[in-house]
Image (spheres, one colour):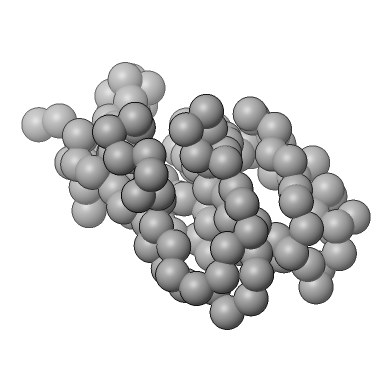
Length: 130
């Protein structure tokens, strides 16, 4: 569980060369769309192998990932909301749109070939401002 403003750090390890990207999915706000987080103007996917972290070490101070209690959550009278960060690893460069429907995103991944990508879904809950 996260509170509004809590920092989020994503880390992991790849066993193969991969382009890494991050997407946000906010089921209670917009369950049908994914939002590009990385690449951004500070972090661009490069082929990597081994340990990784987002934000990357070279971008420290330029941007942060943090939990945010969106005003739309308050309007829906939720006390907490699930949010999901998708870590996408691809063997080939895969350009992400700023916002894309889940259907379109998975269709494009299918065209890339299932053997060329993997997704890890990291779910957390943002608690409301009491």
